[in-house]
Image 1 (cartoon, rainbow, N blue to C red):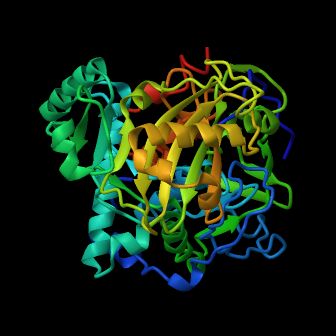
Image 2 (cartoon, rainbow, N blue to C red):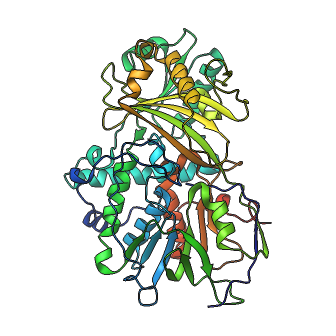
Image 3 (tube, rainbow, N blue to C red):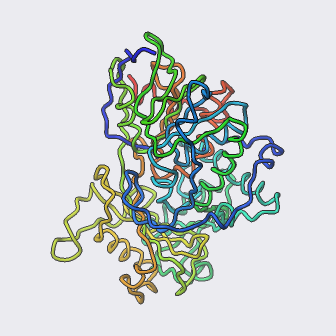
Amino acid sequence: MAAMALKITINSNPNTNGVLAPPPNKLQAHLLPSNQKIFGRRVLGSTPLSLKRSKRNWHVPLRVSSSSQSSASNPFDVVIIGAGIIGLTIARHLLLSSDLSVALVDAAVPCSGATGAGQGYIWKAHKLPGTDKWKLMMRSHQLWESLAKSIQLQSMDPLEVLGWKKTGSLLVSKTADESAMLRRRVEELSQEGLRAEFLSTNDLLSEEPELVLEKEGGAAFFPDDCQLDAHRTVAFIEKGNRRFAVEGRYAEFYHDPAIGLVRPENSCEVGAVQTSKTTLHSKKAVVIAAGCWTGSLMHDLIKQPDIELDLPIKPRKGHLLVIENFKSFKLNHGIMEAGYVNHQSATLKATASDLGPVYNAQDLSVSMTATMDASGSLVLGSSRQLVGFNTEVDESVINHIWQRVGEFLPALRKESLEDLRQSGEIRVGLRPYIPDGKPVIGLVPGFSNVFLAAGHEGEGLSLALGTAEMIADMVLTNPCKVDPAPFALLGRCFH
């Protein structure tokens, strides 16, 4: 095949991190019980992706030999670049809802990027009705709940399989203005049919005894919100996908980065993906779901520009502090301060003499988030920072997270952060941030068979199943269940 003549110009700050439930009999036929033996722990070393110092890795590689998987004799219908939660669930949907074969390509392994570094919130609390993402979010949450229910119908425990818990969520206010905003949010979401109520500080005592607020504070309570464990969920999805490997319909090419797209000269159809080890021929579609690396990857894959394609996706760095086997108290719900909704909160004002370097308010903010995960660990966050692809742990940010959470959960002040760190981990993730706040989902202009699913920032898990359904419907030329127009590249990344 000739080298590509099509030209794409990328204005790159690179970045990114989703299914109509298949017919119940087919879905249930491919549900797999959790296998505790594979849920091992190990310390990740330095990785090119966005998870650092994690003690957990639920991923067990499916060994694929590039020499034995000759792309000439084993072409695939769809090649997916990126094995985060978006890429994995796109593969899952295509495998369950069609007869297509799928290859999954990644420079590393699942959960080594943003997917493995988050808190696992599957929330409606901080979304606004009427926005472009609302219907996608509602569809995706419906699919997550259907998946959890299907697992339960198979006499399995969604908590064990997915880390799935219906914890309910609390959006917490400290000021009268924030309380007024949360009262309006409760009213708006109630009108959309969600169970919601505003709780005063007195009401909160029975729900979260350790949560301490001033008199003018309160919380918006959404009892049906859920959370999951990304590592368990990814392991479950991987095992389900691998059931199709014996049929020759699925293969994983991990630790094998994509380095180019191959297409016939003067054609708008890509025929293959070139990786560092092999060439994977694609008969129907190529899907790029590479998280915050999507922009730079597109630049590398398509080297001779001819079309104006601007992918303004940037990596937004975040820290989480995870304290394993925390026994001092228990949280009953997922908690988030109201300021998180607008990506605002306590601005760091550290100096070189106390907690570290000076931070600009535009570069970094911290919002209180707290939850107990399926393993009984206390997960605290969260920070936001635009500092490129740096994934090094910043101790001053951890100290500020600790201080901020302590303002809401003062019982933590009795604990020693240094001591707790001995039985914990720090997660550093790069969220695929996009300025207008909407992921890009759809066909890449200038190509007839290349699709993009990127820019979900901190909502990759939450929006994954809806995104996967949308991409799969596009590939299969089915009507989309949610209007894809707001997420199209044309007019946003292509002019």
